[in-house]
Amino acid sequence: MQSNQGLEAGLAHINGVPIQTAGDTADTDTLRQRAYSELLRQTAISKGLLASDDVAALDGVLSEAASTAIETLLEQELVVPEPEEEACRRHHAANQTTYTTGERVHVRHILFAVTPGVDLNALRKQAEATLLNVRCHDGKSMEDAFAKAASTLSNCPSGAEGGQLGWLTPTDCAPEFAKELFGNKEIGVLPRLVHSRFGLHVVEVLAREAGVEQPFESVHGAVAMRLKQQSYVTALRQYLSLLAAQAQIEGIDLDSAETPLVQ
Image (tube, rainbow, N blue to C red; front, side, top):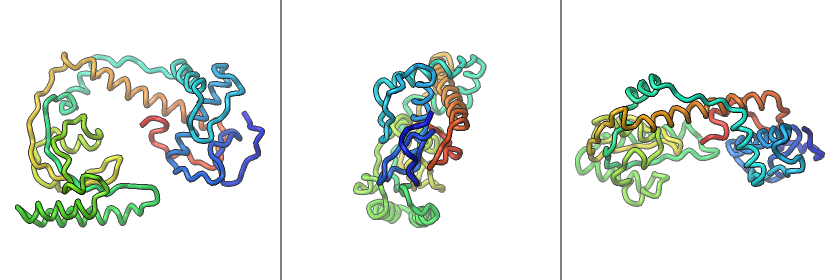
């Protein structure tokens, strides 16, 4: 499917259709999102689910018709099996923290945000030096050192409050952050940097309240839904990889995208 528009050097195109305009400063992740959306939009047209005169979205905002057509396309093309009970039980047994209710932690942190163009090596060194610095103190001096570092270095608004995040439950934070905080007994500054989608965190657990593990029978539905969602993401990745392999792609590399379209 080729566009009548000529290819502009340096701009990203999918099968000749541009997904950005001259001067567009969208980052790589944003362009990948647009690229996968455009692949799906074009596929929906080729399968008769969307009118051929639907206009491509240079800013990544699809038309309502295109969004509806893509939903229909994915319903038709993705095979997502219902998880078997044995698989659900294994998942529950291996992830009991996820299915524990009432657990809370009182936390403060110092965030070193990963932003476009940031020097990751320099950022990591700064985060590691900060972690070492606050761990070298104890008692009141550590409390002061942590609060000072948070107020001067943290890229989170909580820095103004000494890094205080208050009492958190597993649903209050990103899954990768929660995984490091919940289901263990650590108190104090964690001896490692915590990685999340937002960046690198120096974290102190000030207090904990234990939760109650929920039996499999009471959370069977939630477990099955989680496994089905994982299967959906896997199927979507495979389908998008197939579409990308069959397309003419200019100006954007999709091979290294780990989680296309799905956040």
